[in-house]
Image (cartoon, rainbow, N blue to C red; front, side, top):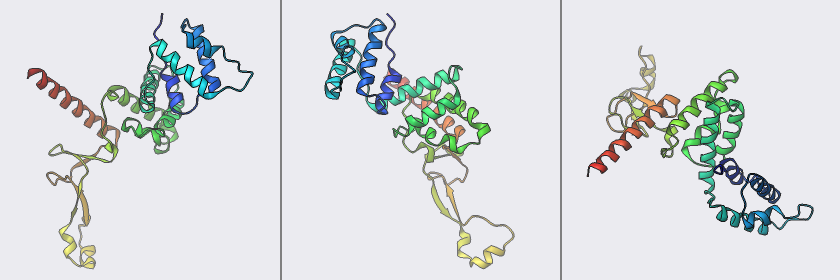
Length: 236
């Protein structure tokens, strides 16, 4: 029998899109697909012509999951699993990128998971002509690195091109501030009075990790560090 794939269903549950009537319909579909448990039969047999007791329906649903041996993931995990399924389907050409963007936005707005953060307003950050390319680009990033834990706030960090430190920069005040403003303003070469520099080495050569390339570079380095740490652990 084909293994159950309930990623889309559990994501709908996490989005509060599944009603008691939907759970009864789900049970009917499971029986039609060859699944059969006592609670599944009871759930599928509830009369939709009469008002349903939502607590009773939920109780039989949870029993059915236990009998099927399918634990329900927590909402955040359910949303992430479904998101990773959507990007694979999109990259394989089985799903329209614009439909994916709409659904991914729904998922992202329901979770604080950094892996989905960019999808919250991706559609507002690119032009109409660039939407499909942006969706495919971000889908590829999630498919490649979705198994990693992305640090919260990654989209607001910077990576130093000189020392490699990633994190929040610090502000450096220009020595020009000691000059009267009217003198500094009339000098031929103007520098910013306050600039952001690396918190470690003080270099101004910073790459924003909120950009696609910035996040991709950081995540590649993160995977390499994890692989190196795992190798050391095995060696010990």
